[in-house]
Length: 112
Length: 115
Image (cartoon, rainbow over all chains, first blue to last red; front, side, top):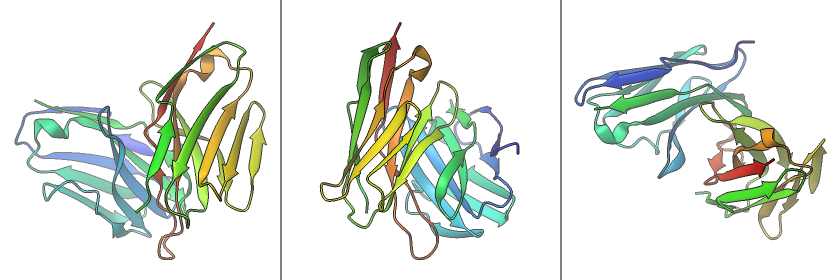
């Protein structure tokens, strides 16, 4: 199993541009999570899907952030428009019924 | 919602010594407590977990203890080695409306093992 696959690994973009982060969860896992990690705030849960349905998006910072999971093997996190304070490492994780999360390698986003 | 506090934020030990990291949680309904290790440039990796029906669990040099009454749990690493140096996160979760579990993470502990 290739694990949770995230792309791109690094993204540098200018303020105001749209950014799309992608995630392929482990086959058979039915829960998917997007986290943001910064030095100041640690690991923050942004949104949680179960069986492709968003269950809790209370961690999404504001309307500039949106996430979709059109099928069991793919999810996106979009930021539009991006701002410098969005710079962080974004992790996707998947699990079976919420136990034993497996994290991807993350996307390091830099907004200049 | 759940709140997880983790201490210490940094821990330096000599190779071969033991390391202990402690966490407290607020939601008495939490029933699953995993620990993750994050190495530089990588995502967190699950190293051990415990469920609320168990008080202690061991896996080689790693052990986790849970005190449900006091709502705290701890990670114990014995005979530390330089490769144990990393950031460790505790987490807690509960079943969420029959839709699986949602983890809340502690703030992390940076463990440094000096050769």
